[in-house]
Every structure is written in structure tokens, then in C-alpha cells.
Length: 246
Image (tube, rainbow, N blue to C red; front, side, top):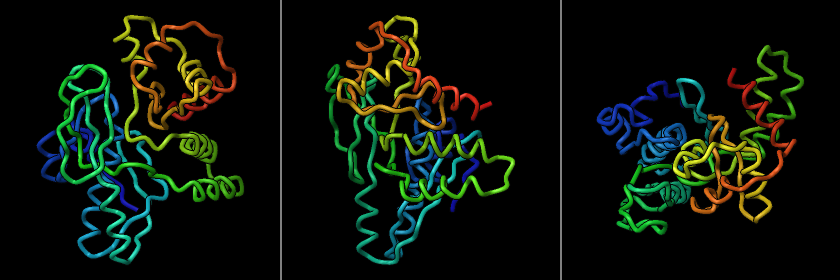
């Protein structure tokens, strides 16, 4: 397990410190909690592969003023090679909310599919899954038998993480609503509609306004402008997220 409390360098608020300490170019953007956590994992991965070891993330999260990564060390050159393959970048459009993930240690120059503008690399980051679903399930099973004052909060956190998509960034639906020049609708409705239309969508455990989805930004904005009824199941999850934050 590794815990980092210097979230300002990790999340791009102190850019030069982030470059010095973690060998990465962070970004102080709307999804900085996600990239901060993945910057830490990338740093751990790049250090371990020097010794022909790989890592397997088990339970990783960002909370308040720290990020924490629980992971398994695997002692083999093959595991190290697989670990290197998980390192890459998020390419963020410099003009619109568009972004893509790109594997590899050296970012390639590309243009945004949405608007054609240049895309700026953020990283190197750990890409893909940062949770082991079997571990999360096992944690849920034993949590009820533990005599902790924080059992309820931990249960909410595990529920959110268990439902969370493994994408390396998220969209802030308030920020997208501002781009669309509309009042933000309930996030629960947006998630429900995207799922109905064949996209994957979820909340993120570290922010009540974070939307994780594989839908393009243009699709999300169109959904934001539509009118639908509230989805009660998602509303209850939102209440759980708010309770976790309070």
C-alpha cells in the first residue's frame, strides 16, 4: 500500500513539483482527482519495473486530501512487461471537452475528433482498471462482521467503487452544462439515458458531479438538453454519495 498526501503536485496545482517528484506532467483540470491517483500508480509502476517486477492494482481511491493505492507486487519480467503496457496518457483537447486515452511511454500528436484542435498530453498515467472486482466483493462480504464506527461510510465507498467504470478520466456534468449553456439536470437522469442508449456510464467515488462514460462529449451534451423523468435507483446512489462526503 502507498498513500500520498501531496495532492497539489499530483493534481497539477503545483506543476513543477509534480514533474520533479513523479516524473509526470499533471493537469489541474476537472478530473484532477482521477489523474492524481493514476499519476501515483504510474510512478509506482515505473519504479517497480526497474527490478523486473510488475504491479496489480487491488483497491485504489482518492479521498479528501490524499490518494491511496493498494496493489500486489508480482516478481517476474513478464509481469513487468505487462505493467509497462498499462502506462500511457490522456490527450485532452485544448478547445473543447473532448479527450482520448493513448497507450505508450511517448505520446503521439493527434487532433480532436470533435473540433479538430490540438490535444495536450497528461501523464504518464496508469490506464485502465485500478480495482480488483473480486477483492472489492470480498471486502463487502466481511465488512458487515467488523466492529468499526466507519462501517457505513466504507460500505458506501465500496458500492460506488464497485459500480465505477475503469475510464481514466471523467466529465464534470456541471462544466458540460455550462458549455451547453443550460441549467444542469440531475446526473442520475443522464446516467440512465446513456445506459439505455447502449453506452456505459457511472458516477465516480471522489466527486458528486463526476460522470464516467464511454459516450462522446457531443452525445452527453445532447442528453443534457433533453427532458426525462428522474430515475429513483440512481437518486438513492446519489444520496449515498452525498452521505459519504458529509
